[in-house]
Image 1 (cartoon, helix red, strand yellow):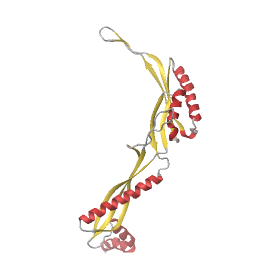
Image 2 (spheres, helix red, strand yellow):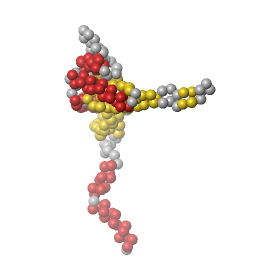
Image 3 (cartoon, rainbow, N blue to C red):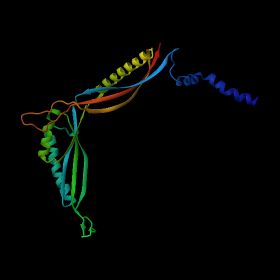
Image 4 (tube, rainbow, N blue to C red):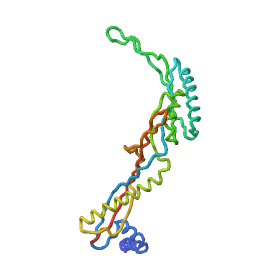
Length: 249
């Protein structure tokens, strides 16, 4: 009798909690109609738009006989760079220090006639670097800002990376295009198999790729006294989806 008691306990639990059995069935996969088949399609959607933001790096590298001399010279030069950025209308929130470096500068080692090192290289000075990351919102004036920074003493400039500041609309457009591409592919498979698309069973977003520079570009921005020519081009936002469709005769 003891054996019967323990054998019936799991059955009683399953009957008392039918939701457990239902959950297990739901996890086994989508319920399809008779004669239907399940098709999974992955697709990408893109949205290309003109950027409204350029991010670049600017700063100063200086040298001195001592570390203190190199850093002092760098501080003086960077003060002029900051003043120029403010004069150009760049907001304080759009300027952020990204790199500060101080490194020794070594001379050449002394070697004898046999090529043997007689004296190791000695420190002959120091090099200091200070870089800031800048967000340029006025793309038409970007070239002038670069020229003004160089005139103020900046000798390190790199970038830019063009971006869309508020990318939500571009992402949604890419999502819609991804779904259209998925449906077109599903219709193609269904037609080739002699079937039709009945419904969407599931949708999952596969990922988001940050905007990339598209290789076609607008004409460089120039005026009567040409600054550095800048071509913003367009940036491309990509979204991917995976969609399951039910196909039926």
